[in-house]
Length: 411
Image 1 (cartoon, rainbow, N blue to C red):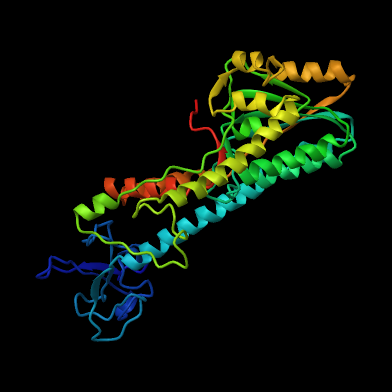
Image 2: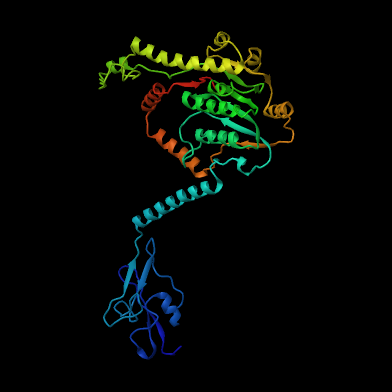
């Protein structure tokens, strides 16, 4: 380094800022290293001196001859160009954009993980070329609602169940089917769809068993009825043979008290029946009862056919009550008390299927992020509502419940 090169430090100005400069070799007006402190260190002759910083960071530029020198941020300057000290301001907009990008990335990662891990919509049957017994797990409320989306977290997927039954029906290597039922029931339509598929399976001549878990009530018993043999865990609750169309509330008197008026514009007097803003008429009650009675008679007939009982005998048991496994066995609703393992052993020994492997078909929604988002969404939704609003929403949902083979008593 040229001996003529030396550092110069100005006195603090009114803002307390010191300006650093370098006099270049042979008195050149500016050094190629620029007016920044780092550049001056590289040029030589400057000790590591801290420069004042505004919160959020700052950049310094200064000319080689003090506050009015020619230096600038690019290290080049002309005579008379003042140096400057510029604080950098953090942009809220930039932070928002970063947060949005992170959120989108998390969502996309969740979708990718779901695709990679699988949503539970594949059965082991596709890779089985040997003789096997299929075990189909039917757990949770039997419903047609889609639970396979990113925000889904349920243990039951109706279309998946129907697809797996088709797998068993059309796979010649399937030699038997065992339903593991742990369900309080569900919708009339969806329950009967499963029942019809099970009748289709029985036409293959292969054995069909039902192994009941903790609860197999109402619709859970409905789909078990056509089985060649029904086993129930000793702690199982079953039965609940009956139909429910929901719970209807009448808040018309409460509305009158607070002067609240409601008006439904309908095409007929029974179009809005069940609305909680007006009392239900006798005619409307009779209409709902006719729906329930028809579905009930269908249920009774299915039990009578499946259990080889008279309809009158079934009706004595079908008042909607729950039965323990022991009570159900005594009344002929199940064949024996036992576990899933007992059902497998019984089918193997009874039908000569000892050499068959076991193919388990169990729906699993592996959407980790979907589970998190669904819980966060539920929390946010509940937080936005007051107690009264949440209660009214719940009451309205009860009134809109579709006709169902559903047990109100659950473990």
